[in-house]
Image 1 (spheres, one colour):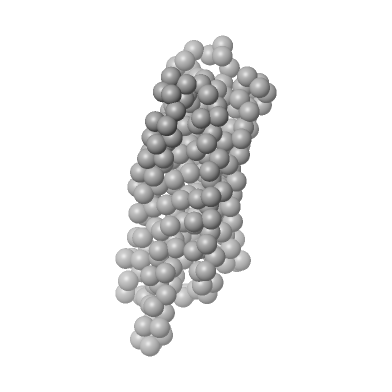
Image 2 (image 1 turned 90 degrees about the vertical axis):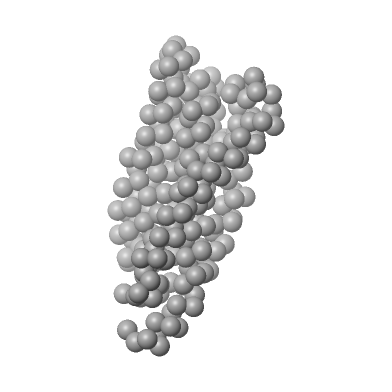
Amino acid sequence: MSETQESRGSSPIVRVAIASWIGTSIEWYDFFLYATAAALVLGPLFFSPKLSPLAAQLSAFATFWVGFAARPVGGIVFGHFGDRLGRKRMLILTLLIMGIATFLVGCLPTYKDIGIIAPVLLVILRFAQGFAVGGEWGGAVLIATEHAPAARRGFFGSWPQFGVPIGLLLSSLIFTIVSSSFPKADFPSRTFYWQQVPSSSPMERSTSISPSSSLPTGRRY
C-alpha cells in the first residue's frame, strides 16, 4: 500500500474509531444494565417464590452468566458473516439485536404473571444480549483496524475497548438516577419502576446506529 493511499485512508479513520467506540459503549451499557438489574430486582420477580431469597438471587446471577456464555458464539457467527457480507451490516444487526432484547426484558411479565415461562424468556433474551455484544465487540475492533493506517492499527483498534468501562459507568449512573427517583422501599418490588430503564433502549439505540450506518464498507486488507 502506498503512502498516498494510506494518507487518504487515514482521514476517515477517526470517524470510524469514534463510531466503533460509541457502538461498543452502548452495547456494553445494555449488557451491564442487566447485571445491575440482576443484583437488585430480577431474583424475586422472575423466579419461584418457593425459592429462598439467596436461591432466587443466585438464579438471577446465573442468567447473567448466560450472556457471557453467548459472547464467543456471537463472535464466531458475526465474524464469519462479517467476512462475507461486510462488517458494517453485522455491526448494525448486533446493535438492533441488543436493543430489541433489552427492550423486551423491560416488557417481560414476571413469575407471578406467567410462571416458569418468565425465567425461560429471560434466559433467552439474555442469551441474545450476549450473542449481540460478542459479535459487536469483535466486529468493532476489526472494522477500526481494517480502516486504520498500517502504522496505527493497534492504536485505533484500542478505541472500542473504551466502550466497556464507559458502558459500565453509564449503566450504573442511569440505574442510580432511576432508583433514586422513586421510593426506595418500592423500587425492587414495583415492576413499573425498574422497567423504565431497559424500556428506554430504543432511544439510546438510535445514538449508536446513526454513526454506525455512516461507516465505510470497504476493507483495507
